[in-house]
Image (cartoon, rainbow, N blue to C red; front, side, top):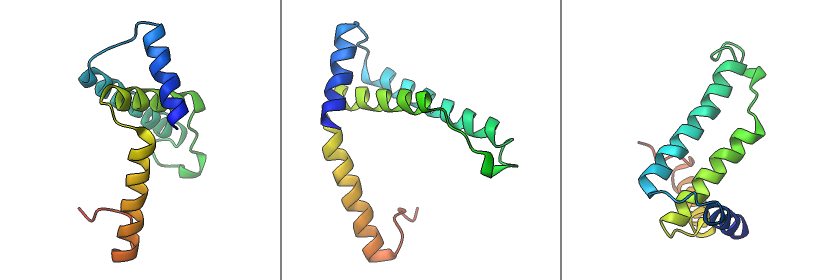
Amino acid sequence: MEDQQRRVAAFVDDHDLEMPPEFRLLDLVSEIGELAKDANESTAYGAEPDELKISSDEIGDALFALLALADDLEIDADDALEEALEKYERRLEEDGSAGSGN
């Protein structure tokens, strides 16, 4: 993912797409909303869960927004993912669930 984060950062720089991190966060939330919209529409708002269809370009938009945010905050996405996986592994070992329990 390090290469992807660098690609996103270069794209942002090359195309003058810089913005403050708080706007990046809003962009990420908007992109996640697009995923939810795809889910709602494809499943008839949950009535037909087996019909779930998410467009790959919407996943790409969310990844782009997330990697751009990580880069703006000087967070290495690879390291962040590794921390999350370790946390989930620890929770599974301790509680049998990857969730936080909150």
